[in-house]
Amino acid sequence: MGRFVYWMNVSLDLRIEQVPGDDGAGEWLRIGEELHREFNARARELAVMVQGRVIFETMEEYWPRARTDDTLPDFLREYGEIWTDAAKVLVSRTRRHADFNTRVIGGDHAIEQLAVLRAETEGAIGVGAPLSPHNYCGRGFWTSCCSSLIPRSSASAGPCSTTTTVRSSSICSSSARSNRG
Image (cartoon, rainbow, N blue to C red):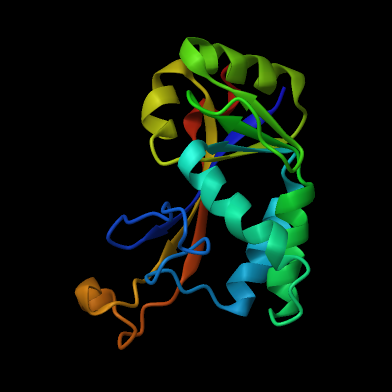
């Protein structure tokens, strides 16, 4: 049986990456090479990536092109390859098709379909969708959380702006639900 891992980039003031057209990040998200290489290593270990429509559309717009863009650093091209080639599940009420090794599920039975996915999968299932923890917590889905807290670099970030000594860090913890079905 697979285990769901909440997999999102989150600013210290709880902003998430989510807007299509922002090249996968927006102005606030600044991830250096060291942290991105850590993301790459962890993403490579995922059996499946589950993404909501908005996150998926952000990713599909940028990462397939990034893998072959010689103007980008190698660690970004590497993630482009990882994301594009990885097995993915898109949870959407509106989309019926997606490219890049992606299966689409949705509608009123998405939770049941994710339960089947979990039962049929060995290994970690990375879930990248901002509302997913709220939707699935009461059903014993979550087995761990891997959120990366990223200081915002804009002036509105207040004490977590680029002038502070706060560093980006990746925080992962297992929950007490890890042994529940």
